[in-house]
Length: 386
Ligand code: NZQ
Ligand code: ZN
Image (tube, rainbow, N blue to C red):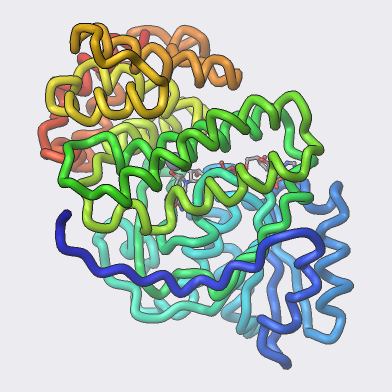
């Protein structure tokens, strides 16, 4: 196991009717800006519930954060917060709203320069406006981590940043608020969480048994419960298991002391910023082909995964075990309804060089756990995904 430090300060408040805890976790007297997306929380009634629960606070609202939140939109909130002096933010929505809120929180006190430099020049964020979240879409893990992915539309750039200053103070996870998710978003969430686990697990062994078995538990849960959520969207236990799995998939625990990959994510971000596909759709396209191309570097973990997750017979030839493990993975995404080829999204081979150019322009040329996923490898991966 590699050396590591681990800290996660996010208070998780999980379960039915947990929204009522809000006043106990937002300091009394705060001026709170509720931040949300395109309106799902209005339609579901969540926005009204939040306002009722916080009736003793000074409240404002900022809606309209897009999926794949944009710098352009987020900066509007930054101006409002600076001028109206909000001192607590409450993000209510999915990963986009939470990521957007993280950027807003970091940008508000970042007065000296353009806050985009937090992302483009990796300027460390020293302070941020405190915020909490009410999660409505289990997928990204953003509710319990310190990362965010922001799009600058004018530059066609979708890039991540991380800072200890943007851990949420708390996150409320009530699985009931996920009942209103469209099928596509249920599926996206399960596939995203699955691939988060894989980006931290499917590398090379370092004899990290707990991290491996924890990851395998999360994968098995997502495989078992994902299809059930599509068939039976109001099954509380199914939703609860998926929600907690997605949070644990990317809260820093399973990545502690192990190598990490993230190449599929970095390629996926380019695809979203160029062609607008949902985050999970891009991952479902890239990941199976990434495994195929990188199967030698990942051989030992692929064999372990095949046997422990898909019950593949270890007496079969190694090549056959690996091929089967990859094929099972791809079939799972398809079973969830997330298509795995560019052609399924009406994209053809003309995308390949554009994606590669974009990766190069963002310095994403040495990806993967060994830094070996270079533009030539990505070209092979993308061509296999047509
Ligand atoms: O905007 P509203 O109206 O709320 O609708 C959203 C949106 O259209 C809808 N939705 C959310 N909860 C709902 C609901 N509709 C009905 N009922 C509900 N309960 O779902 C749509 C998608 O929402 P979005 O927040 O975009 O999805 P997701 O949670 O998958 O977040 C994706 C974003 O997170 C980033 C992705 O790159 C992408 O920008 N990621 C963030 C990570 C992180 N911070 O650690 C890691 C991930 O790998 C990922 O990159
Ligand atoms: Zn993701």
